[in-house]
Length: 254
Ligand code: NDP
Image (tube, rainbow, N blue to C red; front, side, top):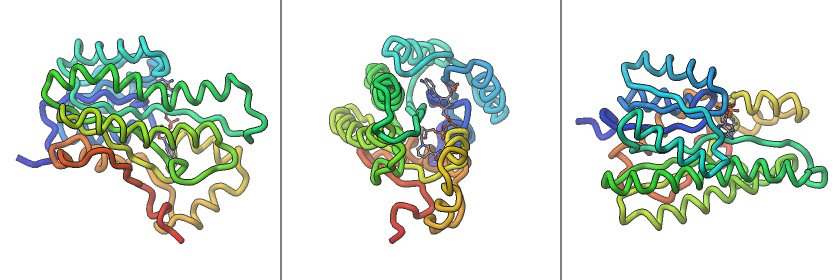
């Protein structure tokens, strides 16, 4: 059997209805995993689930906000209820508020922290008892180039993406004895709804990314299927607490 095979596994992908989350969900479905697509927009989630079902896997959807601890718990419970297990959590949902630090309102600051840092923690915490009972599991968190570098127009986002790498290391050490591997993926600049907005708000961004990225292109959601399968499968059973850039070389360019 292939070490990348996910037949019989169940994955919950938050923000799996678009962008990087959907790119990861497509990879997981191709490898045989059933997918719970979770997001706030039910129509978008249903459309994504219908697309994923074409890979011949079971799918379900959950409408909710990861930033709320009770909702994260309900999301996990619905996954187990509808798909029978929870083996893989991709805590991918994220937002950004682009403005200089001095212009942030407390509510804007809080909303980014709630979604990008509290959300993945609440989801991981809710997933833990199910994974432990199953004898193991895989958790993937999503960092960013701002886990490494600062961005002048993204102070809250950068704070959460730095924090999520440390949270990943903490969870990895806490749960390694339960055979739960926790790893982070650090995307470079990827063409999604999130960055479409950035390109209109940040002058010259498109060209700067092309010039700085050795692969000389923006990433696509399809660039994340492979890493999702690797970090969700037996192929990565001795890999935990890492933060792996998927960035076309952006983070190593001098
Ligand atoms: P998109 O905006 O395309 O997708 C974000 C997804 O998250 C949507 O599916 C959205 O669905 C969901 N979402 C947002 N907030 C919530 C919430 N509170 N509760 C539940 N679901 C939510 O963004 P990307 O695909 O680009 O981003 C995905 C992840 O990758 C994020 O964590 C982002 O920070 C990270 N990232 C992205 C980069 C890029 O260049 N694009 C670079 C580095 C990191 P809905 O609207 O239905 O809730």
